[in-house]
Structures are given as structure tokens and as C-alpha cells.
Image 1 (cartoon, helix red, strand yellow):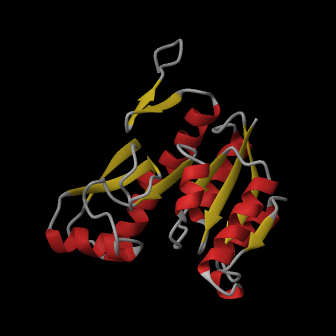
Image 2 (cartoon, helix red, strand yellow; image 1 turned 60 degrees about the vertical axis):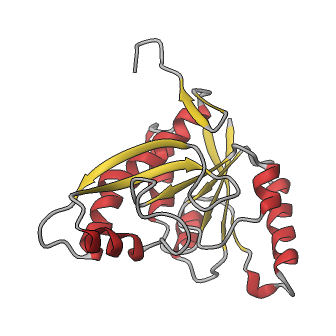
Length: 213
């Protein structure tokens, strides 16, 4: 059974998609061990509690410096015997020591088709604002493994979403969540939980099931 830590900062819609998929059987062989937020007011914490999942706030504001915050975050993850860390809208830079300790065991969902509209400064509505300003016809979402860079790790899954005339950053954000993010993240977790994903030389390989899917 794959033990997940889901790291969040806000409303937790991607967390809800994971919770729903576990309960419906869309994700098998996995359970959420802990939900961690840097924001004590994050509604995601309430979502976790409603499903009987341990939830905790570990905020940089509660520590003397970043080193102390990083140490507390790692201590919590280690104490929960986590196999996979899922960044589901976690708006805090991941410390290098975490990336090293959990190499190829951290995934992130990003609301664009990487390498478009990604990297430092591209998060939340800013991604969709940039996509609309550029005039792209297609955007989407990407699940990737986390490395030392920002949105630079090996790509696991991507899904395209059409940009419609009259879209605002808000309407586009919602469509990307509904059509891509909420589908991709549970799919990625299920693949990993069932041993179908391997990473080598910066590339991801997904093993096919016996039936060819």
C-alpha cells in the first residue's frame, strides 16, 4: 500500500479529486497518510478531516528561519513513513534536502503543457493569464516529477485543454482543473501505486498492463 503525503496551500480541489478517486477505486493500492499545509486557513485541511485523514499545518511563519521549517517538514514526512509526496497546489519552494531524500518520489501538478508557461513566477491564475495573453489555442496540465529546478523534472502525464473565445483567466483555470488536473493527478498516483512507472536518465517510462492499456 503506497502511503501518500499531499501538500497543499489553498482550497484543495486536487486533494478532493485524490480522495474521491481512492474511495471510488480510481486509485488502487494507495492511501493518504497525511495532508500538510503551509496555510492554517486552507480549506484543504477541512477536506482531509472530513475524510478522516490526518491534517497538519507546518508554516514557515512559525519558525525562526527556513532551515528550521524545512527540518520540521522533513521530520513530519519521515515520521509518517511516506512513499510518495504529492504537491497539489503547494505554494512553497521545496527544499533541496527533500528532493534529495525523496528522489523520484515527489510529483507536482502544473496547470500548463510544460515547457509552456512554467518556471519561476508561473502559478495559479498567472499561468492562465499568460496563456491568454500569448493567444494560444490549446493549454492543459502536466504531472511531473520534482527535481532541483522549478517545473523542470521528468514529465509523467499531460492532457490538453482547448482555449475558448471569450475565456477569462478564471474560466480557463476552471476548465483546466475539470478536464485535466482532476483526472491526471489520480491517474498518475494510480500508475505509481501499481508499479507501472519508472524514471531513468530524466525520462519516464509507463509500463502497459496485460490488456494493453
